Length: 71
View 1: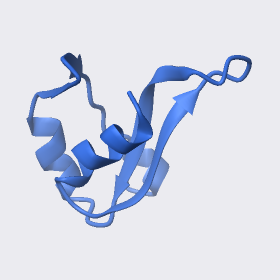
View 2 (view 1 turned 180 degrees about the horizontal axis):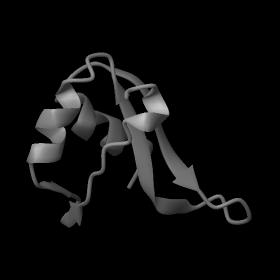
View 3 (view 1 turned 90 degrees about the vertical axis):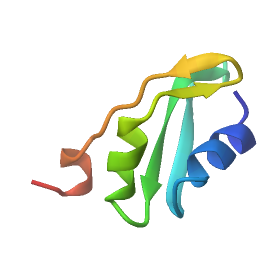
View 4 (view 1 turned 60 degrees about the vertical axis):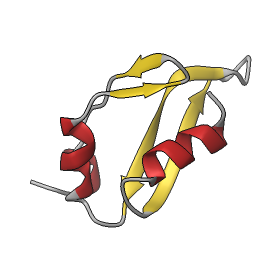
């Protein structure tokens, strides 16, 4: 998946403050996962509650609360 598609898809849920697609160190090719950060953290609940299909592939989503300083 290209970065534009990734950002466009997840950006429809709310304003993104950060986004990244992880790439292999040696190949520079996408590793198949990425991260987004929303300006409003409550948007994550909506994203997690839905099933996502991008470019015909189902996407699994996880919420990393500890990373962002939540307790």
